[in-house]
Length: 208
Image (cartoon, rainbow, N blue to C red; front, side, top):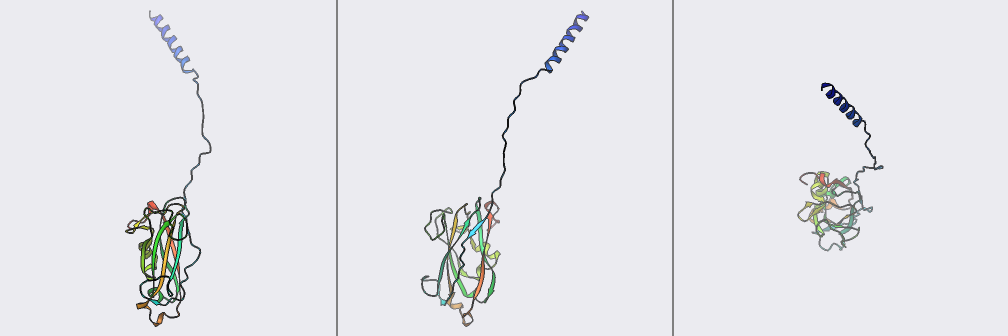
């Protein structure tokens, strides 16, 4: 009886060994050419400078087409592939600094899908134009000041992104402030740079 049991166990071991060696079917496949890319950020701006010449003392901006006032449209475009927030400021002043306090400007902002005037075809959430600044040039001078004054905004100055391909149109009216325009403001000249800085929407500085 023990001998028969031993033979049976031996047969089972051999059978198991044969089973382990069995070659099951398999198949392989794959997808080649997989890529990973990142988006980019860039801004384009108007290529014509603001040249407010021949300014004479005026009161608050009334008839912006009258002599002594200067009006211009400029634009900023999101040429990147992600939503962007941006702000602007004046920098690198050269010439007669007295004009930083004597020259004032009023600025409006509106979004559009094409550069030009207020013929809007796009939106930053709500239609414009929106008044974004009225004050002296000094009030826009310096990056820290610009963070709070000239930015992509909706009514109430809530930061709103500029979408890829979209433009922000600024209308700027410049005049020489009558109460601040003493004799020392005659025959003076000032040059400044208008700078812009863009951020990815999710990284917009907290509090701006």
